[in-house]
Image (cartoon, rainbow, N blue to C red; front, side):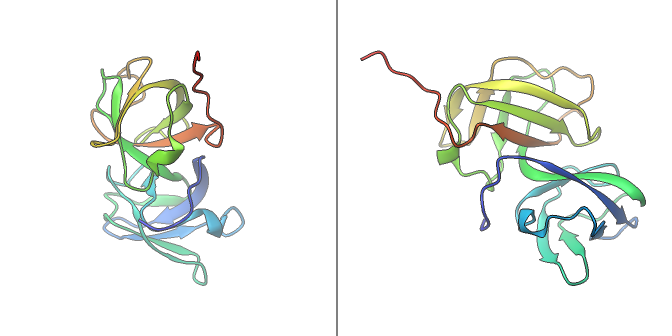
Length: 169
């Protein structure tokens, strides 16, 4: 996946019709440099696993990979950022390909947004990384409250440009 690494998720007002993959973004809020193919998009009406396929700044639209299952009103809220798949009652998640693993490290904090309840943020600390499978282990377990059973999460990396690993030499 191409595009710049952005450590943070962003939320935007958007409109989407049922059975459509065209997402009209509120131009007054849009930060077009933040959108790039491969980033996850979550919000009411968007199926889990939806990602940006293309960006059309001229017409103020994003094309997403999966059609909406219902209408999203003009004041609908979507979140765009790096995605991860994580089941409830687990402390593990698999990062999407849009996340460059060289920017992820032990001890790093991340905030997670659920795909079906945008605005619900929870903070975790990374305690393990498996580079081969892109799996990260967190310091606490996802609870069922606010998270769907096994959907896409938007992850926001805190202090992604700092390395907090220390050694005792």
